[in-house]
Image (tube, rainbow, N blue to C red; front, side):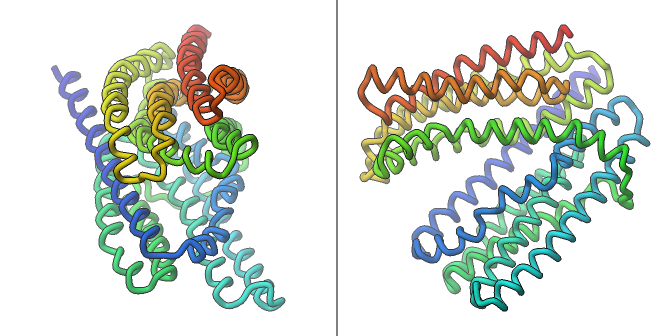
Length: 419
């Protein structure tokens, strides 16, 4: 009876966390539409030319945040709290020093570029703001990885709801101050994220660097980070194919498909953030790979039904919504409908992916990610030849690839369970 009550509470916590994440995503989307209507493309382009490096700065973390994301719950599950805390202290020390040195380098670089008149005052401020947001993202990723238990995910639910409110509350900044209001808006949102993550962080310990623990975190975290990064690149292949072999018009027509796909994946994205530490904890607690396997299959069983239902609704709505709201993009309706199913299949693959990460079965990603890269290209080529339509071809190629890879992930997870 107690176990059933515990499971119900766990599902409730997960549901609330995912729901708050969706609310936050929706609030962010509203802001995105407002920005496009209030700020000129030239101003947005100038700001984004400074923020483009944000994703690349994450490479300097070497996957340490991803390492503690897996190792902290794993060692807590094994009831080796001292080892878990020691690794947390090392990760915290590395991330803190990295951000400090990045700020020093950025400040000196900005002053040098301003002195050499490469940047004017406006550009210098934009560079500092962009760098700050990038560094906040590093801190946010690390601090977010320290929230592991159901009670801590309740705190994350609260934080996400507060941030959702701030997304709306700060909108007047954009209206009254244009691009600079938008820059300050992003800065304040990211500052609030880091402050709330830090205030409610579950482990208030003094960070201390240890070389041995750092190497352990690197060995675990870097493969997770690397394969996730390559996976993101593989997901961007359809757009890349359209850029190289198509035209700006085709790339533009594919935009609704990409946006719909991202929206569909919001649910599994937040669900997996909840599942990954749970899987690692269970594996550490029982040392039984079959526990992780069963947890993944159980999640997939319900997730696939939910995602398929959402997908079918979207497929029905899209032919009416896109021509009405975005009439210039109506030629991209079929591609958007197809990409819905790419998202449905990929959502299942995401669960299997985090299950393999929790087992540290990184060697299988060499095939799984490489297959996705190669399959999208080959399948797209075949469909383009058959239908003589590049936009339709890459959409079908992406959907078929995720369907095949869904079975591949299941096979390799079973294999990892037996080893």
